Amino acid sequence: MPAGIAGQAGVWFEMKIRTLQKKDISAAAAICEKVLLEGGHAKTYFELSLKPTEFRRDFQHLKYFVAEESGKVIGVSGFYQWRAYPKDNGWLGYTAVNPKYQGRHVGTKLLQYIIAEAKKKKLRLMLLEMTSQEERQKKIFYEKFGFEMQGRIKDFWGSGVDQVYMSKKL
Image 1: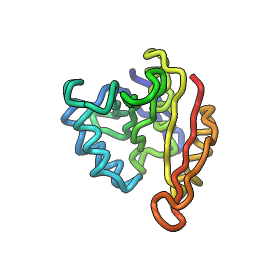
Image 2: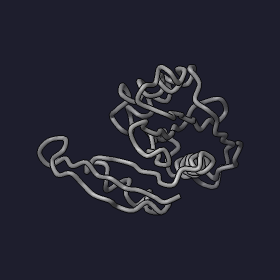
Image 3: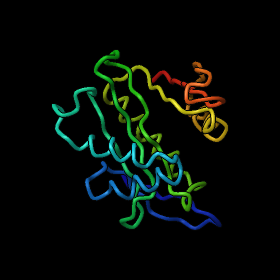
Image 4: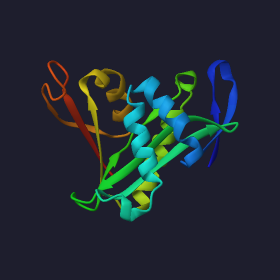
């Protein structure tokens, strides 16, 4: 899905969103490492998303997409469904944009794409989780898409680091 995106100082660039492929894993994980400090864990999910369904015992659906500009991965996002949870609930996966491309609506286009894909699967609810350390930066972004705060678990990750949950009805 090509999309012309306005860059800084009015410079336009062509971006397309496509399914993550094996060749994209290192670049996508590196972006997550820079932005989320979770590149290693994200890489595991990216690799798992490419395996046949029978090897993904905990997931009924797990798919990632990349934003690409001139053949270079500039962002990543995806969604998944846990087998143990209601079949019409989805979770937003690792979502990150290369810092050089932030502020150019790459994250917006990725999230719009993910929401459209989730609706195609007839999901009723999209959920996401983040830490309280990420909350200040991300909460406003997700609220623009209709996500609402659902709760927090105090000190989940240690003293002063909470787990935060948001959801959106699709």
